[in-house]
Length: 274
Figure 1 (cartoon, one colour):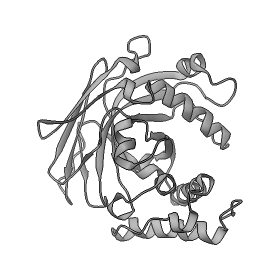
Figure 2 (figure 1 turned 180 degrees about the vertical axis):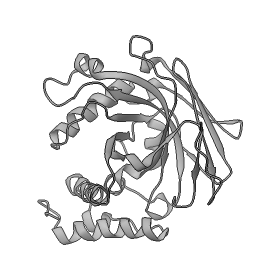
Figure 3 (figure 1 turned 120 degrees about the horizontal axis):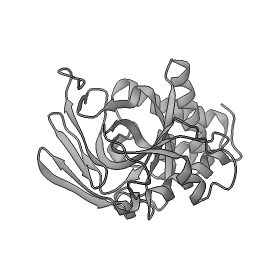
Figure 4 (figure 1 turned 120 degrees about the vertical axis):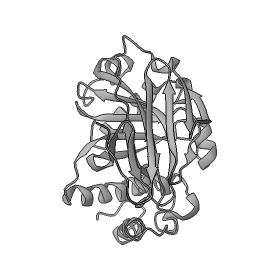
């Protein structure tokens, strides 16, 4: 692994190995900030190394997730800026699926607006008009976030290195175009086992989920990995994230988009909807 200006290669490799061991053993680890400090470049280097390893093992990159976009989630984590992680094909689940909690360490869930891109966002101004025109579908989504770091004791660099504290995601079956729905106007209500546990709206996501997409498009291009047609983009939480336990069923209703749901089981009884 190549060193950054401030963090040697050995420290980057040790941070990646620490996070990987936590995932493989199911035992959360100490934060990696003792190895990489608050160096954002170093944190993304650790993230890229982990993703490269998973791709070499057979996974395919299918999109990105924007994190830390909601003031409520920023307050929960103690940060003041967005980040992003990479979505792989083995992270995705269909609407109403049952997901194993085995393999998850400290899962939480949040409701989001997802975008499916119909065009690359690699060249040009990447302004509002270009970003809007690149979106082919808008879909309700749930993101299952997780931290390999014990007790969610994370700084910004910790969560970036940990692939944005990502784990799984669920896409709803309904989709709309931007001619049919304005993401900034949506209202979200998420239930756990029938009881409302999180509420929010599109404006809570960087002022507009499309702002999150534009931020990601520019950031990804700056890092040399621009967004491509066909990719799924989770734009960020619309409200507070909620802890997950086996036996829970979560459902989110997002006005103008519809609903999306997921259930959790400990080790078996996993089903895929017909």
